[in-house]
Amino acid sequence: MQAADVLDTIGALVAQLKAYAFQLPPIVNLASVPTGVKPKPEAIEDYEKIVGRIRAESTGTRYKILGDFFIESLEAFEGGKLLGSVQSMLSVLDHLERMQRDKEIEAGRITDKRIAEYRTTLRSILPGNKPELDSIGR
Image (cartoon, rainbow, N blue to C red; front, side, top):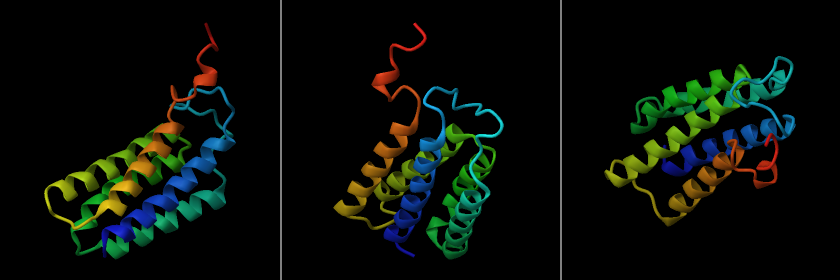
């Protein structure tokens, strides 16, 4: 397993999170999504398959430690807790960067670029990153 394989998985999960965030009403406390705005069962199943695949492929590699973060993200996603899922994925990116910095994994400029892209996308999902909503509630 290579860093690129892990990043492909992260990309697939980020796409799932972005699609779910798009389905939510524009103004909602994302920490506690109301019942009924949970991801569709098909989306949960896809997310679970992706997480299951990366956990199986990472067994016995230095990437196996990321499995807990992926499980946290899945559990939050299943419960409709977008913030928890995003935070877990940001933790995966943080851990990958640490592994790269500590020379535990080999990664290049393309890896750095992909990590930055995923981080930007995940942060854009978080509340407070939508300037058009700044004046609401004042």
